Image (cartoon, rainbow, N blue to C red; front, side, top):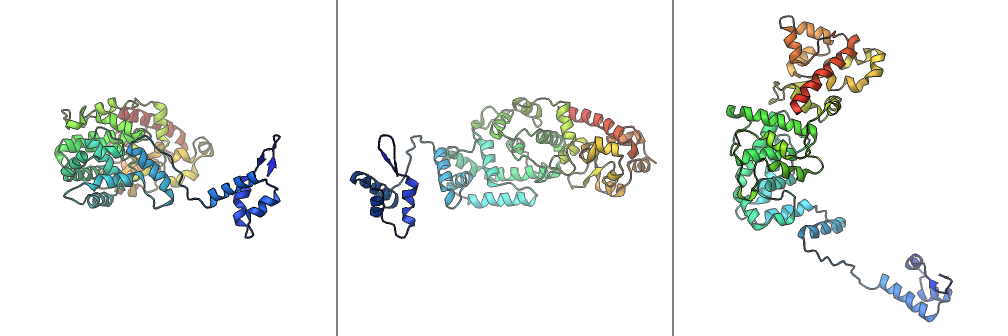
Length: 411
């Protein structure tokens, strides 16, 4: 305790609160030691009672009646109990009023079925799909899941479920995996297209949809590389959906003969043509990273991706990097040697045959009975000396080819 210039007594509250840790604790003894007058002693006892005896509930009265805000507050203050996320609560509300089906089992069975295809979606994805297909607001909000909306979801559940299954059959046919499908939100415009056009049955395999599948593939891979749905995903989803309808509540869909790539890209405000700098950054993507597959799949669209019958291959083999001239190592390093600039996509059998052969040897063998110009053009290989000693010229010329091709694809 100490006194200020006006002779007011000040207690160190932390010291007083710690008195209970002393087995010989006695507030009267403490007051006597501090030579407290009657009024000061009364105040000290009141403090002690408030902290150690009175049962007080601290609360803040929230005037705002928004359910989403209340749930967010609950999630924060419940952190010390059994953990419940916002999506857990949203899920409970979404499935509580299904009349005929066990909604929770239906949704989790769907998640498991998609998992068996190699994609780890969650209940959050399914809830977001409900909103994207049927609600004017794609944001995950408590108020969105009212009785009318929930009834509509249950009535159309089989169609929704089958459309989502078809969507991931399609993604798998593109050679995508959970690792390389870097944005699940990017698939929702495709889901909307399959669902509202009623073309989801066997969409991944029917010959009549071949042109549409290729159009969707090019768009999806481009969107993944641009990372369009990162960050403010809900805003981009809202913009993308305008390509299909301006009146989501009446379920109208604009007349479409194909997946509306141009319309979606026009609606997404931040989607602009990409330049050389962006593409040069893409070309430094490393082998077997999350983005190397979509880049190479766009550069080599004719591979058998449906059966995962493809390999990412170093043109100049990885095993020969140590033999690279020191001046080339200093200039380019492993970052360039292991990047798209020195990679191609090969049929798995073709790649096993190539193995670690030097590039010049492999090209000579492959073109003995083939048109060499056509072969190197199809493999996006420049017309240069293919020896390892000429690595610098090879990389510079190949970079020009890849920039031009990606610029045409992405734009």
